Image 1 (tube, rainbow, N blue to C red):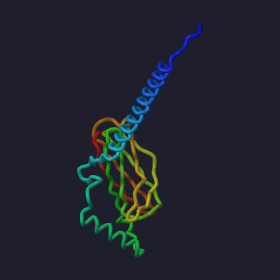
Image 2 (cartoon, rainbow, N blue to C red):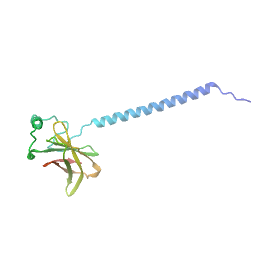
Image 3 (cartoon, one colour):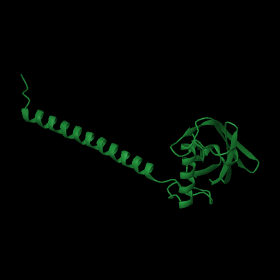
Length: 178
């Protein structure tokens, strides 16, 4: 005796498998796009400066800051580098919840030299590895530091950056609250 299977049962099973597979694929694609959108929105959130005397990174430059930058650029284009006593460092720090980011602006265009950073809170001191200087079109910057907040205890930290370029040196400070 032979049992005949109906083509209808086989067709229904195939249809169910196809529908379930499509639902799984569509769910996976949806999760992927939601994750991508969340990552993009977290990247677009601007970091704010924690120091009361340093401007936020998205603050437009003041007229005198623009003029100082233009004067420095003109001096370099004309071959008149700033004297050693005039090299300065502007340091900013921001805290994003899991990372402390330290950024510096040096009023000299150079690729030579190094930058050191020390973070202090009371009697606690944290030193990070030395980084090099990166020249930009109108100023230079230290290559910067991203420090995991897990390395620091909660509270106010004083950040001191020292920069050495040839015979010139300068330093800048900032504060950040965790």
